[in-house]
Structures are given as structure tokens and as C-alpha cells.
Image (cartoon, rainbow, N blue to C red):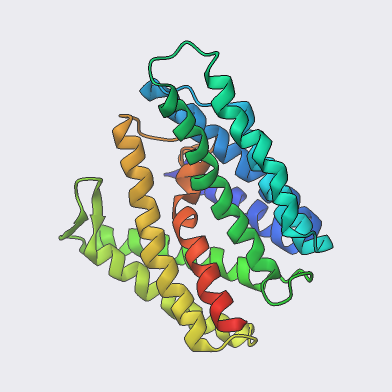
Length: 269
């Protein structure tokens, strides 16, 4: 528990620093973080005998994230996404030269990697530019992380003390409805205090953002648990002592960030 707490403290400092230090630090940090998380995903699925095209997947992921950043910084046109086409289809061609009994599984998991990991990170990153597409504002990504952490903390505390009814036992036997509702209460309560500080969004929208983060963040946690159980492994990695890997820490973000972005985009634009 002590190791877990120390790791969480320092990792939180790094996360907050990456947001407060400005647009370029924020960009580089989450580009690297998304690539590391994708590497964990590709390493993880190798346990199941899958051999994804890791280098191409990383190249596509880096290009997707970089083009997203360029769109916000320099207003690059979306036509530059066409640069992805040769890379994506090279996966099919290279698989012809690999002696593997399940070639399309390798292809499918290569694509799944940057769809499941990279694109959600791009949506989270884009929250910083949502109010104005070419102006960095840390309010939304900071609030997103705070609400996600509040959900996790509330779910843990309420689940430990009051948890009796299993939420989704087949994939995560420790999660309970009491923990889920506790996380929801904690996150919504925090959203009210955030609305007092960041007044560009109404308290009702902040509350809606909190509800989405808790609901879809929980589903994201369950999806990653389903992945790990299918591969009979406990953690996605060991980089963070007491916490596993980066996928373990950001599983809630992977499903909730795209939904939050769409929710806010439709309301704010």
C-alpha cells in the first residue's frame, strides 16, 4: 500500500506538471504516453499468440497524434490524414510474408491497438483546444483527470466500506454497485466545486461531464479487465510499482474521453 501511495503521488505530480507547463509540454508528454500505452497493448496481446505489426502500429499512432496536434497548432487540413493510407495498407502486404496461421488476427489487433489506445488519447488531448481550436486551455483536461481520479477514489472507498452487490462479477469481481454510486457521488460533488473555479462552463454541464466520466470510465475499466482476463494476466505492465502499467492507469480514459469530447463539442459549439 505504501509503494502504491508513493507511486500515485509522484505520478500525479508529473501528470499535473504536464498540463500546467503549457501546450508544447502537454503535447509531447501525451504523445509519449500514448505510444508507451500502445506498446504495452501490443506486448500484452502477444501472450495470446498474436503477433501484431508493432512498428507500423506505432508509426501510425505517432502520425495520428502528431496530425491532431498540428491541426490544433497550425490548422492543418484534414486531407493530411491521407498520409496514413500507405502505412495502414502496408500491414496487409507485410502479412503476406509472415508465416503465421492466423494472419488476419495479427492485422486486426494491429488496428485495434491504435483505435483502442491512440484515438482516445487524441480526444483527451483535444479537450485542451475545444473552446478555441488553436488556443491551449488546460481547464478541461485538468478537470477531466480530477473527475476521473475522484471517481476512482470514491469507488474504492465506498466499495471497501459498503460494497455488497457485484457490479459485473464476470469481468471484475471486486467492483460493486455501492462503489460505483460512491464514485458517482464523489465525482459529481467535485464537479460543482470545479464549476466555481472554471466558470466558462455551467455547473450543469460540469455535472454531466462527471456522470459521463464515471459511467464510461467504469466501462473502460471493465473492458481492460476483460482483455486481461482473456489473456490470463493481472497487469498490463510493471512500470508503475503498485499500479501495474499505463493501460491499467488510463483504462477509464480510453472509453470516456471520446464520449466526453463529443458531449462537450455538441454543447459548446
